[in-house]
Image 1 (cartoon, rainbow, N blue to C red):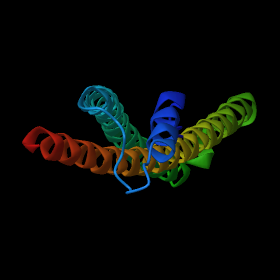
Image 2: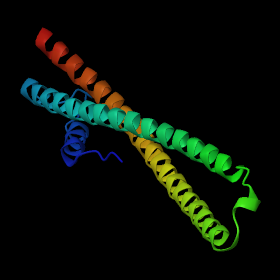
Image 3: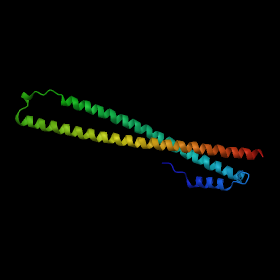
Image 4: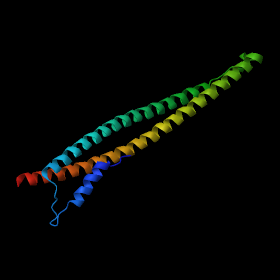
Length: 162
């Protein structure tokens, strides 16, 4: 989640408080240059966060796809094992019991592994959703900061012309 820094709030409060009766801000040119430096720094930080999140989202998507592919492969292997034709006449007595016990253990381990893999995929997708929400928030912040920077630049240009 993105939180507006206290110094941005201070800048906004100062801007509102420093309005003169004619509506023109009483900020000096130096004040606007300071705001521009601050906004430029914040934009750089937010863009860095955006790049980091985009990388994380890419890795999470890749992990989700890999987990999904692994689940499919495990299911196919499990189904193949489950459909094996076993000659019951060759497995008798203790050998049959040993085989049945080991085969049941294999099925249980396979099911447990699939459940854990499915849980991991769910966790990855939940984190992916959180990251995508954060990315949207950061993109909105970047847009707001860019608009503020454009306003500050316009003020600088207007005051520089005077």
